[in-house]
Amino acid sequence: MPSPTQRVLALAPARLRPFLVRHRRLVKFLLVGSGCFVLTTVIDLELKFTVLEHKPVVALTVATVIATVVSYVLNRRWAFRTDGRRPEALLFYLVSAVAIGVNDIPLALSRYAFELREPYVTPFQQEIADFLSGMVLGTFVAMLFRYWAMRRWVFTSPVARTHAGPEPGYAAPEMPRDVP
Image 1 (spheres, helix red, strand yellow):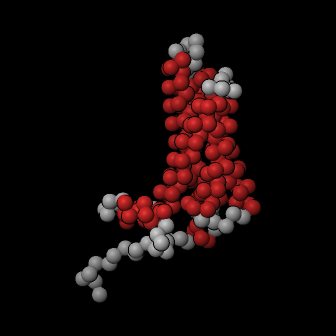
Image 2 (spheres, helix red, strand yellow):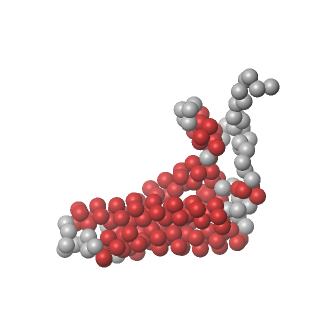
């Protein structure tokens, strides 16, 4: 029975399939990140419009911490397929703590340095500025940092490092027929 990854790859255009298979760890990382982005957005908005109405940076931080826990489990079990050693978890959370700070910087700058908040702007403009600076720009920069740091320091087990060939069940790249 094909895995969920294999089923999704079967839906991809044939021209893209070799690229996606070759970079499947990055694709999986981006899928985990996309799901966690949605989770972070939902939690952030829920907190901003209820209990943390006047603390948008704290709301974003709490939402990001929750999504980070989910991200760790999904990245460890699926994207990087490692065994979950204790130092790995510690390194993951250290990298993620730095990434949370990276994620919060654009929102803090938007709100407090550029004063894109009430009474200087309308509530709608404030929410747009918060979303673009905290959720879009902050998440993008933190994602780049996380991917680089996770590959470099966290998920470095032999399985993650030497997984150059296709995963079981994936067809190997076809050889030209005129080559013996």
